[in-house]
Image 1 (spheres, rainbow, N blue to C red):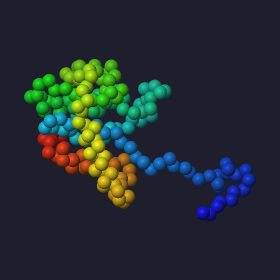
Image 2 (tube, rainbow, N blue to C red; image 1 turned 90 degrees about the vertical axis):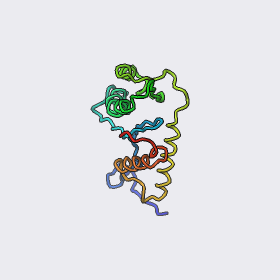
Image 3 (tube, one colour; image 1 turned 135 degrees about the vertical axis):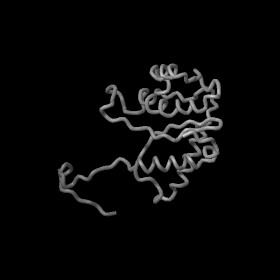
Image 4 (cartoon, rainbow, N blue to C red; image 1 turned 90 degrees about the horizontal axis):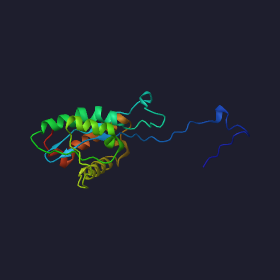
Length: 174
């Protein structure tokens, strides 16, 4: 292994500083819904910008306002209207802060979205996510097939979502 010799006291000299990169990883948050005989598209959640911070502690993750205005309104409500013949349709979500906030509860109530206070542990979505992730990992064993940016990751995930046997056999509602 070659060694680099620097002159003494040169650690802050611009000639000897190399940029450091944390990682080449890209992450995207997705939302979808699955039910008996229907499913939504796989939706990539927009990353909020710094000027959208609501407080000094805001880490710019998905907040309640974004969840209601960019997910529930444009995707869940139209899906519920299409399958409105089913009575007592309940939405099961995990306990993420954007799902349990006062703002989201008020939004659900205003739009007639039934949400059980304590959802039973029968949610199939964790199994569906495991299938999706497994399919993506299988595709990406070849490093040349891995996505290189956020857009490629979104396209690959949406294609893998559409190819899932569970999803491709359901009635598409998109």
